[in-house]
Length: 102
Image (tube, helix red, strand yellow):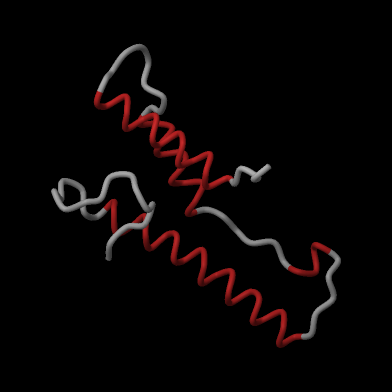
């Protein structure tokens, strides 16, 4: 059995929401308010410190891990920002890879 990832769950919900746009019956799967909450939750993520998980690491390992986590979160926020700032752009991707074009 293949595990379902959180990304898969989000993609499935977005697919349902896009399908609703094509054939609107009943209530939409996602409201605008839920989209806003989801975006805020994504950009407000604060990584846990390694020491909070009881993992001892050297100063260099800690800094490298922390920098990598910050870079990953910044990449997510950057992808969201590129789509939010391109509202109304007919070239925006819909569905598919889940990656925004820069």
